[in-house]
Structure formats: C-alpha cells, structure tokens
Image 1 (cartoon, rainbow, N blue to C red):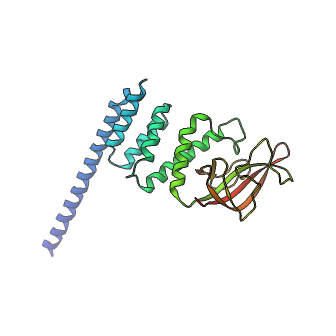
Image 2 (cartoon, rainbow, N blue to C red):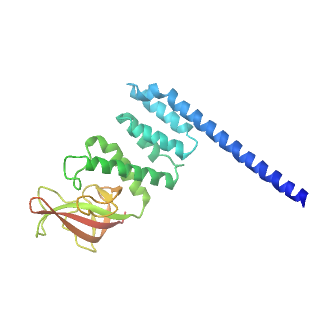
Image 3 (cartoon, helix red, strand yellow):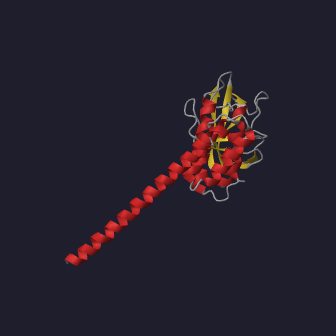
Length: 241
C-alpha cells in the first residue's frame, strides 16, 4: 500500500506544480501585456489621432484573451477620445473571433454607461437621450443588440395626451400609430431597450438598443403619467428582426 500512496502523492505533486507553473506564466503574460499598454500610453493619450488608433489596434492584436480585450475596451471608452472610442467600436464589432459571452459582456457594460448618461441628464430620465458624445456607444449597443437575435424587453415609445389615443405632435412616437397589444410594428427611430418598465421614475436595467426599422411585436402596453397632462407610453416587445 505504501508504494501506491507514494505514486498518488507524486502524481498530485506533479499536477500541483504544473498548475502553479501555468499560473506563474499567465501572471507574467498579463504583466507583459500591462507593460505593453504602459509603453503605448503616450500614443494613446497624445494629440495625433492616427497614432492613437494604431496603438489601440496593435494592443488589441496582442490581446491573448477576452479579459485583455475588456481592459482595452475600458481604456478606450473612458479615454474621452472620439477617435479611440470609434476605433474600439470597430475592433469589437468586426472581431469574428469574439465569443457571444464577450459581446454580451460589452453589451451590458454599454447599457450601464448609457443608462447613467440618461439619468445624469437634466431632462426626464425616462425619456431623455444621451448627449451626442455617446453616439459611438449607441452605435455599438445597437449593433450588439441586433447580433443578439431574439430579445425581449421594454421600450419608451413616446407620449400621449392623458385619456387620448392620439400621439402628441411635440413628441413623435417610435411607431407610426399608437400601438395595441398583439400588433407588429416597425420602429420609426432607434429606442433603448430596458429590462422592465419604470417603477416610479426609473426603468429597470438597460439591456440594449433597438435600431430604427426593426420590426417588433407588442406584447403589453403601460402608460405612466407625466407632467403636463401627458402619459409616457411603454411597451413590452419582442424583436422580430
């Protein structure tokens, strides 16, 4: 029995040593990748947009896994540089090797960012659109939402006069006619997709953005009173492509 346990212990030891070696190698690789980002900081933060975009693209090519790519996404999106944000959008959207899980992670991050922008606006948090500086993030979220395929959620369609079925001219609805449950309509503008309709002043988590021209099935309708004798019209939808 002693030799048997000796073999088992030796095997376990070799396995643990192998695991530790892999962890060490991965730690060293991540340190090298962090050093690569550090070495490109001057280009990433400089005034030359061409150098900044080339630096980001080269770092993205060096990224071994999607955790590395997620780091670069955070760096680019939070940089304040329109060129870097546009370049990162193109890199992610054109990355044929990116897994559905990675794109899902980016989609939810973008949803959180845009939701914060909406809530930080001086306009009504439910109806406000993020500032123009968020157009890149909107474009990314719209594309990732489309690529997701079948999605459901809640959208803010527009405002109606309280007790009326006619849309207000001052606030165009996202569909050509006031919707009814069970109908299938085509969006006339892009709209944010939320996990739930507002409970009080805020909707649930933003999970996507549905592009203009998308066909949606109306599964439910809710009206939320607003100031000025108007109702915000929310619809639970399923995207039909």
